[in-house]
View 1 (spheres, one colour):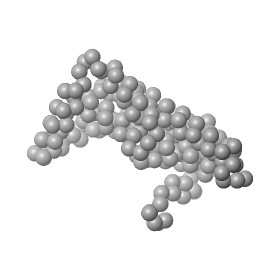
View 2 (cartoon, rainbow, N blue to C red):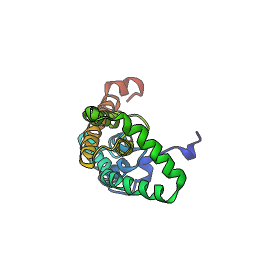
View 3 (spheres, rainbow, N blue to C red):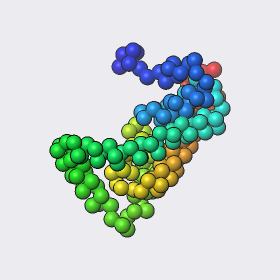
View 4 (cartoon, helix red, strand yellow):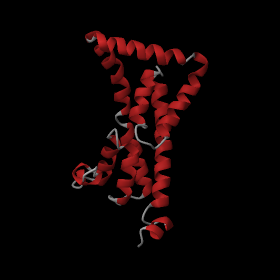
Length: 176
């Protein structure tokens, strides 16, 4: 990938309050906590605790709106497009049929685990979509996504603490 397409989260927010910048980076769907915690710590020089806290807050700000918006948006698409109507009916029938009453609790825990895994295409935004598809009620989805965000934040913060510039591993491999 050429340098002009490289993602430089810190560069976008250099003239902004570093706490606000951390929260805004955490709101970006592809960055979320995985991007905001390392940037807050390594570039904005926030203590890890603040990086974690402001990243969790920023990551959760859009989620209630995303959860709320998905229902009306899919309904509108179904009403205005035969292709989307067919797609959503197929998607809902296929996924919700698999989710029986006895598996409801497991679906919610699986949602939290899915959100907590700090890998690309997982996280709060994807978790909101999954909660919508599996018809997890709004308040339960919000709660379990929050639990997942806390888990992801803890995982990313731990990795940054272990591999950050103050760590033994950083000094061993990078120097300093």
